[in-house]
Structure formats: C-alpha cells, structure tokens
Length: 173
Image (tube, rainbow, N blue to C red; front, side):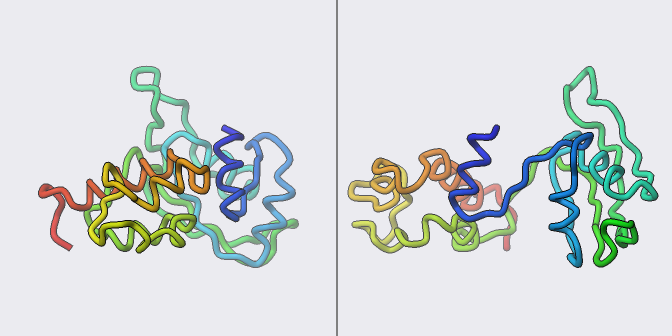
C-alpha cells in the first residue's frame, strides 16, 4: 500500500499516511481553513477518521460485512460538518456515502486523459493520430511506460477507462 501511495507522491499529489486511531495532527493542520470532502470506498474508515477529528459529529460506524467483506454503506447521506473544534476552527468537511464502484460513462476520452497528469507530455506524439495506446506501433505512451517514465499500471487504467467510455453500452454524454 505504501508503494502505491509513493507512486502518487512522485506525481506531486499531496499524501498523508494516518490511522483513525493514531495521531491526526498532520491532517488537522492540513484541513485548517479548508472546505474538504471525504470520498472513498465503503468501509475504509472515513467516518472513523471524522469521529476522531470531530467527536461532536457522531458519525455512525459499522463493521465490514462478514458475508461480502465489503463496507455496509453505514453513511447514507452527505453531511456538511463545520470545523469548530479546538484544533480546527475554520473550514468544513463534507462526509459522503461510500462507493463500491464508479463508472465513466459521462466522461469523454479527453476528460479521462486529463486525469492522468503524468501522461500529458506524451499525448500527440504517437505515430498514429488515432492511437489507442494499446497495441499500435510507435505509441508514445507505451514507449514511456517501457522506459519507466510512466507507470504501466496507470497506462492500463487509462486504457480500461477509455474503453469503458467508448463502449456502446455507455450512456450518451
């Protein structure tokens, strides 16, 4: 998990490693004066972290389901929680229900590509203008992945999301 997180740190995403029952001071400092939203999979501990940050929030928490090993969607509505704790006085937190999966049917291929910031320098440098970055010869993204300039796993994610967006089953945009 830390290796995965390190990959995003290299892409200049701000990251923090913390535990709901551990020291949350770095997170408190980062949240000061901000409007933030907690988004993530069901059962990863969003509400537990919120309860540690803001005990007055009294967010319901639940155990992971024994049957499915998934979160149980304990948080069912979105709530705006103003910071008014001793350590965090300005800003607010938005708690959102957990997700199990997401789709990209509403996104264009260009919008999906915009989310892969490390690949931006390579777009438009493939041999073929309509390159799908999969099996085409002289694909700039595939070559970048082979050289280690981009993560092969991220290129696979890009390809998977683009395929989903292009799918005939995708809803119209």
